[in-house]
Structures are given as structure tokens and as C-alpha cells.
Length: 163
Image (cartoon, rainbow, N blue to C red; front, side, top):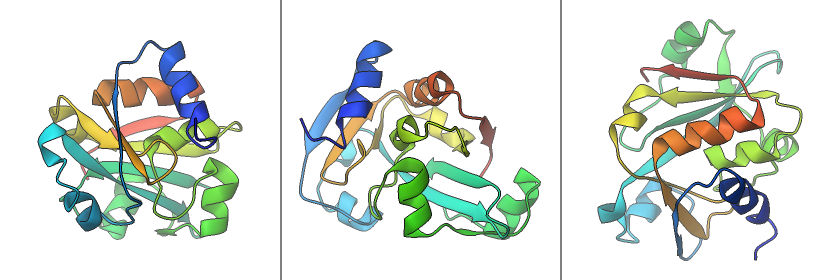
């Protein structure tokens, strides 16, 4: 088993979460993901790793792929300071993820629970969603409530908002 994926599958097993796994070539964008032709399995999610301007708060935004994140609007909804994309260094430091592999399942690597997970409410309108298992060469298909369960189990702060 891929070392990056191992913590994800350990948590999914511990929580008795059912999933399906599809291996595929590395993808870095939603467009590349769409080109794989797996959209009939469920809704592929878009994930953004953001921070405030003082690097005090880090957010993992989990949203429907067709939506665009308005950082000013998110700032207001999160009652945050100015938001921006976090660096690749911060992404690796907090979630042990690399660019192109941002996933809500990466929260299992946040042992200090520094990252707040922000779910777009619309994510929960789907029966099955697709996210990476800590690398961008596979997609895990599971129920969105189970994504929430993983974050809850890890102890991270969670919010649901309309993105």
C-alpha cells in the first residue's frame, strides 16, 4: 500500500466506512479529473487550503467542483482576517500533502488539529463524492457524511457554510 494512503485507509477501516477506490494517472486540476471519465460515480469535490494573513488560522475548504470560492465572501462568512492560499510548505507541514493532492482525507495527518475543515453545505446533497486518498493518483468514492465523520474523529474544528 502507498505510504501516503495508509493513514487514510486505516481511519476508514477503524470507522467502518465503506468506499470504492479508483487508481488513475496523476491529476492536478478538476479539468484533468473530469477527463478521466469517472463523473458517473459521484460528485468530485474541489478542495482549497487557505490561511489568514497572519498565518494564525488555516482552513481546508471542501466544495462542489463547479463552484468558485470568493475569498472576500469566505472571509466574511468565517469571520476571519483576509484569506489567501496557503503555501506548499504549509500544506505539507499541516496536512502532509503536496500540491494537486489536497483532500479532506488529509485531515488524518493533522495531529495537532490546527486546520479547520469548512464544508460547503451543498456537498451533502450528493450520495457519493470523490476525493483523493492523500495522493493524486487515486480517487476514493464515499458518502459525504463519512468525510465529516473522519474530521470529527480526528478532532478538528468543522463548519458547514454556503460557499
